Length: 395
Image 1 (cartoon, rainbow, N blue to C red):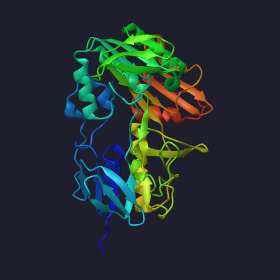
Image 2 (image 1 turned 90 degrees about the vertical axis):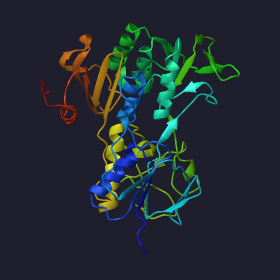
Image 3 (image 1 turned 135 degrees about the horizontal axis):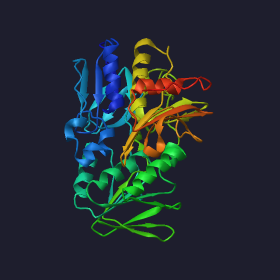
Image 4 (image 1 turned 120 degrees about the vertical axis):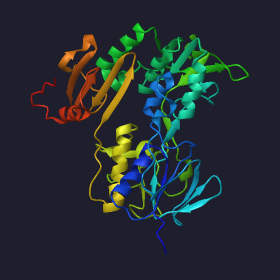
């Protein structure tokens, strides 16, 4: 009986990295990638930046095709079910595909308020192009959600000449960047004319019968004009196809994995099913956490490939790295976020919005480059330095 090989559900960064790493490591069997979108694999981070603004070509985000004939990528192939006993996945078009090992890399999709009527999101290329078209005629844009994505979208929306307002239940960016960098970015947003509203009880998007947005209202009675609304309030798992399969999910539906990226559950052997990327809950400091970022998708996908080829020999330890840019400030951050307390300024001046800064906290060391050119490898080495070692000055 011939080997069925690995089936990877999810054609994004985690899925494609898993496939290419398996081929590089000498995995001897077929590798099949099932993606639900019609596009070939692409990078998502530029969507809310240059692609949305129109300064980057739409096809600039496409990832190169795999040079390996061993990897078969099938687009427009949504998976709707899993039979762990038969080792088969069921597709929406009626096909059934068998596997020897399964990698879950199906990611997540944006959350929306209510039934989602009148709301744009930024997750896919198609989402981004629809929003870009809407922004061309927009007068008032409301972005609901003040995390990395929301602030990037707000910054991009300014380039269309619209009035932009950001609404969140908390002070935007502070929960992810900490007080120092969060406040720095908010000051820049204010200088660019962005209005920021904190609505602790949340908001409602009001629409006409046609679905056209009319306004956004807070639950405490404030009303904000809007003809384009973008929600950036987190994501929800694409794991409906796993319900009842035996694969262990947390209460929200994310896939629980161990230190080797192996999925927990019943009805299948350890190491038979693994997970990588946004969909996976990783064991961290005694609890399970998600790390829905580019670098983790790559690192965990490589861990999945190593486990499949070599068995459970090397645990996966995340090496946090994040980057974002908005309102003329570009951040590269190595280490846990949000950093706490006042940072040590290694180089430059935060008042000039060009600096290299460092925090030493209980969770570890965090180093951030603020409009400061530094190789990522050097930034990471600085974040790994013991806290009692003097800081190295970078030129």
